Figure (tube, rainbow, N blue to C red):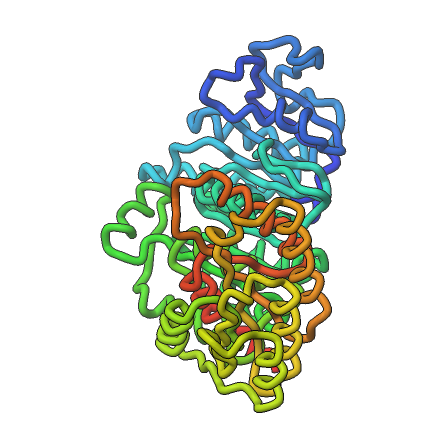
Length: 465
């Protein structure tokens, strides 16, 4: 079945809708009403006559029109009866938010539900999951997500909590989410089917996923083979240790395999594997940037000799090169800075002149022209930027952003801080993040994160050549 009506349902029935927001159940009905869902919403609950002034239907069977998606908040003991009615009514998709299935050993209940669903054309999402977010249809499970228009990133999460975390972390970095699915136990619909759908979704440029187990490895690998030639797939695997696998089993009923085999499969199918939620967001931000590094040769621009030396060690240890710049490039940069406490070789140490934005943008242009360089990292100290008044600070950051937009090579800014107790440093970081993200760049808070993100994305980028 095509998944279009799951992401773009014309109508949704919320089975178990309640006016009481403190029941421990997700208030899907209220969320859909308040966040701009464009279709019809039908609350279903025999215990209430109306919610928010809208008529409540005592049973899914009594909803007057056809239903594309039923979101079910009923306890697991009512799952079979609810599904029977959904199948008889011809509901296309049923999402069970409820837990209490295979993750607690009730595999027989899930098997019975599959038998019922197969009587008709109904597909099941979950159980034990948050469901679907689609910016284009206005459907969501998280009313805190704010963004201007649909983004270009899709997220697939076996955990509702990790899905929420990713969406909120992404929002804080200016990463627009187009679609997200919290898919839980994968009783029926699997991550492979979602990947197949997203492969053909022209609105999606990057796919990220948190996965604990795979139900059909053959289908999953076939889906990856379709997606990864054109879209990067970033995967965070849960349950990679024995203890983690036990936790995954109690969470979603996951049966985890050998991690070394998993990791080899990911490399073979050109996936980008990450190991923390933060790294996943770091890598997604770079992967969706307007320009992605297409080689390992770094041109570094900074202010401070010691930091330049430490960066060289860091980059070299990660497999990157910091090649010497051409004589022409060095002479051009050197003509704008004093020859004391500076270096034009690479890493380029602009000294105190590095905080002159005219000098910084000039050096960026020269590195962009240099044939020995694949991408540029610029390093700025938030502590030093704190000395500038707001107007000059904004002018300088906008100048860097505008310059980077016009260059052929990717520019990756790093804005680091030494002091952790100054609120204005965070204000400056957020200002720079807004400006640089608006210019299509990824931005990082330390050199280690920037290098790790490029190292993760580069193999996929090189595979497209």
